Length: 168
Image 1 (cartoon, rainbow, N blue to C red):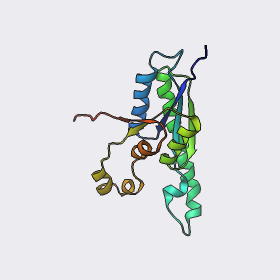
Image 2: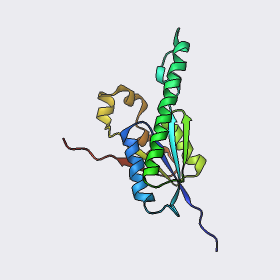
Image 3: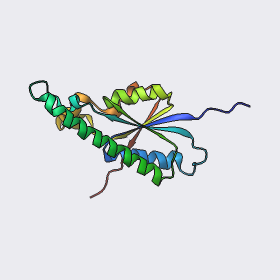
Image 4: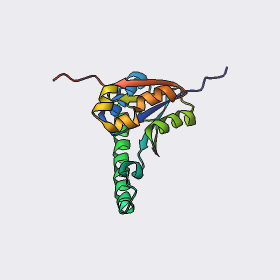
């Protein structure tokens, strides 16, 4: 009798509390009590922005700034990966792959789904609505929502994990 191959789950992370909550939630709900035979191959993906996309400069002096920005982005990526590993370890999940890929998170996550033939993509939600995106944060109005983009473009099931609002 042939055994079914384990499906792959991709979890997108960044340096936000929302994405770390989504990772924790996913581990609690899909990987709890399954350390021997996990239900999915777990691939954790962090999309590191390119220095030029962060700086947005194209003039004299830009070349001198980019190495410093790149260094900071690499440090942030290392912290994000370390935090994800700590969360996995605290949930007794020890078999997973972590990838850091430079580029726009929307494209990186959809490409990771294709590369790993994932059956599910998990992303956190910052909870920005369309009005807030357009009025309060011009970057979001231009870039759009990563979770929204993935929900429409990823070739698999997309689960958007929202962090519960805290009461004051």
